[in-house]
Amino acid sequence: MNTNETLIYVLGYLDGSREPLPLRDDAWQSDQQAKAAYAATGAIHIPNSGEDAAGRKRFIRAAESLESGGLVHRHGKRIGLTPAGDAAARRLAGLPTLEAAADLLAAIAQPDRRHRWSDGSISESSLCGLAPLPPGQIGQARTPSEELNVLLAFAAPLLCAGLIGWRPVSGLDGVLLYSAKKAGKGDAAKWYRTIKSKRQFVTPPHYQEGWQRAYAGREYARPEKPHMVCHLDVVDAPR
Image (tube, rainbow, N blue to C red; front, side, top):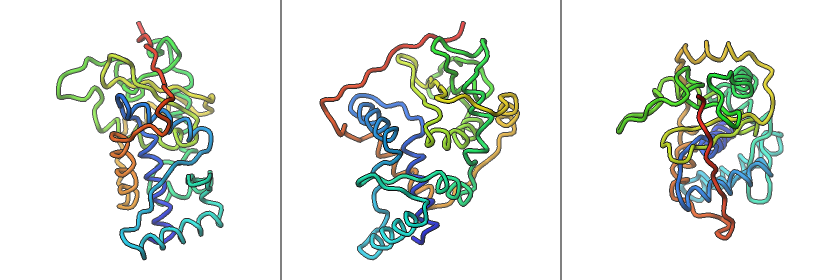
């Protein structure tokens, strides 16, 4: 990989690590611990993408070059993207930047009464222009993939920047709630016009490689600190 490809791979791995994924038992505990570590450092463990010694060395040199250029930062063995690195990587990958996600942040930060849950959050389906709690049907997703793909593309930079968070609702498979950690300065109404456009994002191979590697690995991860236990509280739906 050259430096641009490595930058895109790192972005894909970060997005795959932050993207909403309902998990259970040890995998869920591991994910909660990883979230806490990322919130504290802005970095995660990213495996070397090289398939042989030469490839691994190229990855290390590319990462060092990105670090010296102010696009990547390290925290011990963890790797993260600086704000400049995140913006550059998303442009290279053809994805929305943090600036472009301002309207989504506003929609999450200030949901209207019809869509606001008891803790002030808003459901994934509401952000996709649907009912707050669509009925679950066996073998069918609660939220159509076209709208969901657009939502996740815009949510990714906000998740990586730590401006929003998400959580599954206990006892309701496929129901995810988003909440903002910072008030948005965008226009919530513009976000709902964006989601209706059903844009498509075609990401480069190195982004897909990093994303899939991170996303799939979360299902089988073991807690880094087995004796630390996280808890999930029940949240009431809008009435």
